[in-house]
Image (tube, rainbow, N blue to C red; front, side):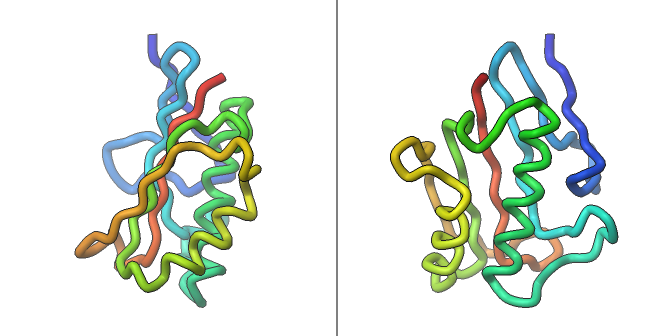
Length: 126
């Protein structure tokens, strides 16, 4: 049976989806963008700030499922511009242990919701 995971410490969904779904021991996390969950305003000051907000949102969802970044086994990073890769990668890497980092792909897309620059989704396992 699937369990819906929600937290007020990450942005509320803005459509027909949930922050995450736990099925057995696997957590499927929806993509997060840089909404500040307290104000629902986007943090778009610069790429590092935007990426930190995305990672903070992901961390909050993981915590709601009693997990950490150590539980993450797969990540997908969507970028509006691959020229931002190094800045995003630096911030993303600061949240993870490189020796146990998850599998990952990073892709450039034509456009992201609300014209953000970064969206990240994750899969984690207990």
